[in-house]
Length: 289
Image (tube, rainbow, N blue to C red; front, side, top):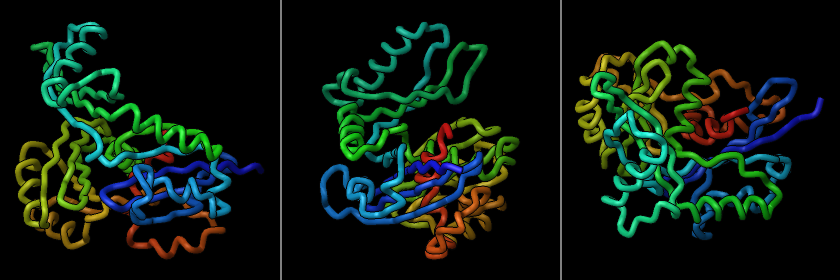
């Protein structure tokens, strides 16, 4: 049977992750993983293995999805009137962003919006907006197109990791949980209720103690049952400390929990125990497949 190969790449700080998935007869396997550092090769350093095309499996990839480091995006949550039509909503979003982004021009940004909590009686919702510079996305697309790849989608690494969580832990769709990303000096947390993002917050944190204090300000607000961690700075000691402190199930997000590894990829053993570092790369590769 004909095999299809598609890839996801994510990056945070100076570290990027590439995941190549193989689809055959309705079954998806992990075919190749790679973690690599920024070699100071420009803004698109995180695409290096794809653009170099040195690896046979990578050269077989047709579609590529990219999960962006949230530090490259502008994040904003604010209340919005539910009675506004689409044009009015867009105007409101632009007005909100113009208050925080100097010389804001809506044409220069691609915006991903998601409704969080809704206060039906007040006809108001909390809107979460992720705004990314349009020319950066086009630069990614042009570079991949030049090497004969199709850019499938671009999204934030947290949304990609969230998708990996839902695919590999379907039981989450009946719970309230927190998905936590740890990078150098930063923690991002999204509260999911029945698989849907309900609340999002991030903070600067340079130690495990600061991460725990951040979670302490968040966990009591919601009746959560589970904490899932991922990212380059996630550690088993922090997972254990979170379990002890909050008396909740706490674990690393395993993005290959329900996705088999191809028998033709024995090198996967290199990453056993560190699968959580590939959560965003695997999640965005899986999107819409």
